[in-house]
Image (tube, rainbow, N blue to C red):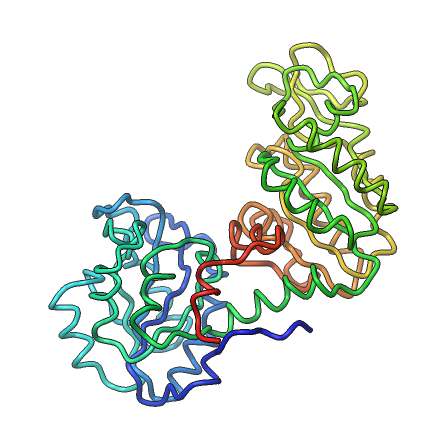
Length: 396
């Protein structure tokens, strides 16, 4: 396992300290009921460790993109109630993340108490990485702990700027996420199989360039596959493509050939025209996409092809859906792929965050895979081999 190269909460004295704990509780709710509490549950080991060390724990998080002003729909208040149940103790709530009243509340807290601050993105200084804002935020605290893997690719005040004003270490979740993802990419048990999907090809090209030299099989689906098919001369009709990346796709195909990597593309796709009414959906071969139609999912033959290609993999990494899974009629490819990964029984299977994690949850494969990441953009950056500001700024 790759060693985590930054200091963690176990490398520093946290006993009886007043600690600002940055987490990623960017979760959706329905009338105050959280729809998915994975990120909360994954933060519990760090919180419980700090409680056991008699620390005062003040939790900081964002929800959504409120653009620097209060938005009731993005409030952290329902999160505090749910976290209280998970911890089996009251989690107090501060109506403002930064105010004199909040500083007084922090000063009067008892050891082992937990306080959740209101959404940190209600302040413009957060996303601007305003150092004056970060300094003011840091004032009441002895230590800063980053356990917000899902936000660590952001150069924001509560992620990066604050580390200039407080001793800063990683929590258990951040350490685990980085160790698993770096081990899967830099020191995987081979053969390594990779599945890439989604719509944004610019991100995935970088991943391919980084991982092709280490992989045995790479499966490409989702909208990004359209650009690869176009590069190979297929007519993808009105499907989403990025013409500016056709040459990059060809270079990746050549790089795969040079490295004896089995790069697999769809041979069968699900296409639609109009708004996707039931009678306007077909499953066709990639050389039979009708003019004016769009590819919105992979077909059964493609999933079988991917499964065969990955059957001997010892490590599998999946990032990106196979189609427009938000619509039920185009979710089948992604869900079948998720179930396929769950049934492979590979020693290591890592599911990227964001949309890919959402599909894994829909398919109920959590107990069949090694790891489902809590971070979409952050996991993408690690897969590309890029440094994360929230990690680089921690103590060595």
